[in-house]
Image (cartoon, rainbow, N blue to C red; front, side, top):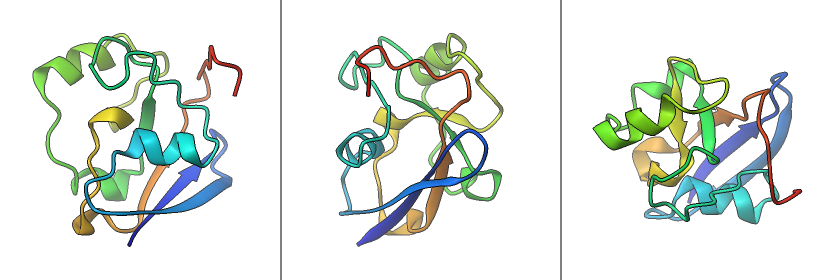
Length: 111
């Protein structure tokens, strides 16, 4: 199992989750009640699943595609380590990944 930590914008632990290799971070977060909207269902047509990856974990992720970088340009509160959670496919190498929700996060689904 791959362990993932979700933090609130102030850095407090919101939830820890376990996932299987091949799971997408977006679905794991949603299943654990995180306010990750994912309006476009992973098609990279929105930035409602934006997360900020912990600086110490960022280099472990594959580089984002040009399309993902374009969507991150539209994300509210984007940082140098921002990613779209729909594009993070969990692998054993990502065990212990920590991400936080941006403080400007808006969840249109009310979660």
